[in-house]
Length: 112
Length: 117
Image (cartoon, rainbow over all chains, first blue to last red):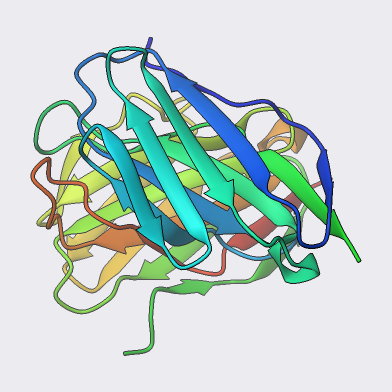
């Protein structure tokens, strides 16, 4: 059973702080990983993708991947109240033609 | 582009009734996915298609669920008969399969919120 695990939270941080979201996955064959953000009552939207070990930065967001530890994380620097949402981690397929498996999501609350 | 279009946005029905959810993917995308989201189980993959062909339907919970994709621009998810435990938000998503592993970035529709009384 391929699984993606996340702490459900809520994770609460003050405005301006760094929010750290973590994810582990069971499928060693997974090659691609994604972080989706979902506001309450809305659909998920992609914010980061990462395919190689190490860090990938995009603005205030940094995704980190460690395939040996089967661990993915998302750091949000200078957190803003508008970052308050549920963050879904998704593991990509180990082979072409299969679908993403999503974790249940971590709810982030940024207080002003 | 208009994005992924789903209908209806909200559906309230009684147990035993047939429910049909509809999806129009983004033009040019060759993958279409149906997901179901609940608080308890999160976002679960039900079925997905590649070039209109069902590839994996192992997530379809029971024979009461069926999905079709008669052409590249339209898909349906049908529940017959519906039960209260089917209450959830059903998302359709499409992608172009552009990553090395084929799934690519998923573009989600706004979802269909189903309530079965």
